[in-house]
Image (cartoon, rainbow, N blue to C red; front, side, top):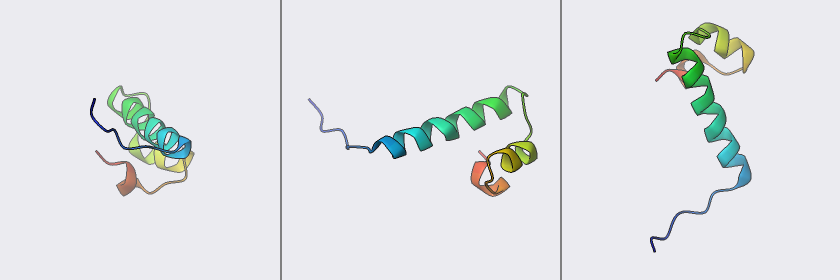
Length: 48
């Protein structure tokens, strides 16, 4: 069995949030600028 790196709960939630934001953008539900304001992160941080 491979040794998977242990991740904290916060790291898992952060990854889920990032994937969720990217999913919303790619599905046309929101724009990068709207998401950056909504989640208080820079546009560059959520560019994919």
